[in-house]
Length: 218
Image (tube, rainbow, N blue to C red; front, side, top):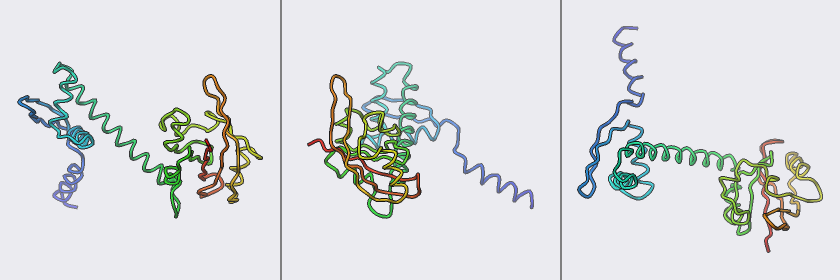
């Protein structure tokens, strides 16, 4: 291999790496000028944050400047906004992957939960909550972010003719049966009991499965 070929391949590899150097830009809004030096990824995140909020980049920069009263920590605030945007994008990607994992060849469990007017929890084979629809979040008084990944028995008890572990074991064996149940939920100062239905949705293996707990609040 010639030296020229090696140099050409090296330049191609280097070209694929994002430029770490700071990019200087002057942003103007309503007569105000803001001079910022950010790396390429940060500028990209800032532009996406502005688009997410349906505003122009210069509007977002001005809003951040106003929030800091145009003080010396303005650059830190801008970088914090860039970091928040990147975190949001990561969370969205993780959510898409999680929802995709809950999808079989038919309708996804997430779609079924969102279509339900009753509180509905999508749970995996480890009995960990994977999704809680709007009514479920309202019923428990908790946001979905506080529920996902947590065991269902952390929030309420499921009582049926069989234990929840036995029901999940049957789902894992491919037995598609609907189980009626009662939900016992302890809230500050009161005990709430409700009827529920436990229904299998998706099974990939004995332990890799998805089922739904639907609460009857009527």
